[in-house]
Each structure stands twice: as C-alpha cells, then as structure tokens.
Image (tube, rainbow, N blue to C red; front, side):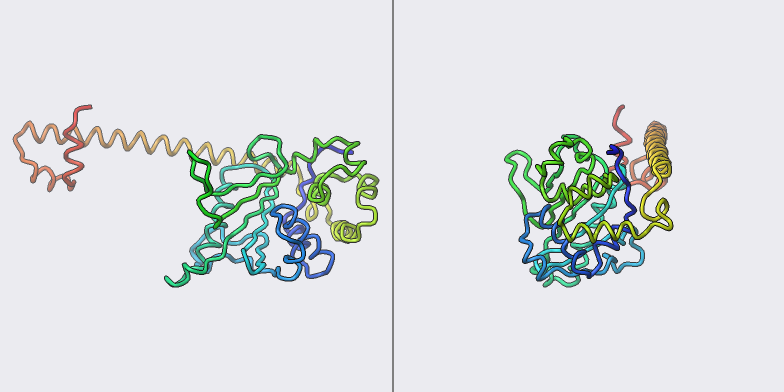
Amino acid sequence: MKNDIKFINDKVVKKILTSEEEENREYLVRIISGVTGIDKTLLKDNIKLVTNEISSNINTVNSVVDAVFDDNREYINIEINYNYSKTTIVKNNIYVYHMILRQVKKSKDYKKVTPVIQININGYDLFGKNDFLYKTQMKEMKYNLIRDEMITVYDINLDFLRNIDYNKIKKGHISDLEKILYLFICDDKVLLDDMYKGDITMDKIRDDFDKITWERDSVLYYDPEDLNRQIIEEKVEEEVNKRMEEINKRLDKETKQTQKLIVKNMIEKGLDDKIIKDVLNIDDETLKSCKEIN
C-alpha cells in the first residue's frame, strides 16, 4: 500500500458528489451524515443541489464553490483542499460568509436565515492534533460557550488516514466515514476490493473514478510536482505580501515622523493651529498626534 496521499482532482470529486444517480447520492449522504451526525434518512429525503454561485455580485471574487446542498434545514458546502495556505483558509471563510449574506436582501430576511455547514476535505492536518475530524463554531473564549449555531465548519484530515494501522483496516475497525474516504488516499486495488466487498455504493463510486482513464494524470489526479509548485508559488506570494506590508508600515511611520517635524517647525515659527491644519490638510486628532513627543 502506498502511503502518499492521492490528490484527486476537485472537478472529478464535484462531478461524483453532484450526480443524481442513486449510488452517488448515497455516497454524498454517507459523507455528510458521517461528518455532521444528521440522520441519513432525512438527508436522502430532502437534500438537493444548490447553484455553485454563492454570490450574485459580479464584483465579488471567490464566489464559486465546489458543491452546495440544501436539506431544508441548513446549507451544506463541501470543499476539497489539497494544501494548506492562508489563501485557502480565507477563501473557505468567504464561502461561508457569502452563503449567509446571499440569504439576506431585506430586513425581514434576518428572521429566516438558514444555518450554514462547511465541510472541508483537506489533504493536511489543519490543527496539527492528529485527529481525523475537527468541528469549529463561534464560541465565547473564557467559558467555552457556543455563541450560536449559524455557522459550523468541519475539517476532515485525510492525512490521518495514512497512519491508520493496516491490520485495523483489514479487520474493519474503522468508521464508515474513514472507510468511504479512504478511497482518496489509497490506490491499492486489492486492499480496496477487500475493504468495499459487498458495498454496492462504493463499487459504483470506484467505477466512476476508474472510468476516467484516458487522461488519468491530468483529470483524475493532480500532479504532485504541480501541487508542490503551487505551494511554493503561494508561499512566495505570501512572503512578498508580508514584505510589502512591512515596507508600507515603515513608509507610513516615516511619513508620520516627517509630518511631526513639519508641525514642530511651523509651531516654532509661531503659526497657530488653524493655519497648520489648513496648510497640511489635517484634522485636530492628527495635529494632536504630531505634537506628541516620540
């Protein structure tokens, strides 16, 4: 069995999860139920696909998600994330906020806003605690009390599956959620045959993945080298942004220092506050700040 995570293309996963075929719908339900604890029957009877455009504002970036579903009680968004970056975290947060905002167009809509559940299937351990599943909600920090249940985020750690004992897997001592997502990180056909023996749903899902063989490397899987290149590019971008932020802070500080010197000189020349404010186009608060001694 290979230990490397299999980076399944998110477009392929999206196609499988949004298919209306019975087995695909069952697979979706098993994932959502396994993560959230929502009753499978309720999901089967009610869940439906919602448009992947979560914002109607054409000027809004990052408004296209992988797959959003509605089960008449909450919106459920599933995202596939391959590598950790600040950009990914921000994008996923934006998706959640958009799904709340898109429901409110008039003041009366505030009374009927539907809670949002975000399920992130990650190729990394977001919190570094070696847990398979993390649940996040807005809480009061001192007393650890949940503020509300309007937004709930679940982070699945696919990297956790790599470290599960082989014998534990063979004996079936893993949860159904771990079992059905093991397909994401394992390409050992013999092991998968044994694991999914008699599971009609997983046979169909595996077939869906295997059908795309004519461009296997570019469609079914992401090239690890390409992923590494993306990671490096994002890190470089983050470093550049960090440096620019430092430069802007330094320039801002230097500008303020220069402004203080000018104010000091004008005061020494006997100019009153009104003239200084008019000449420099500053307000009372800024003038007061400029008068302060470093």
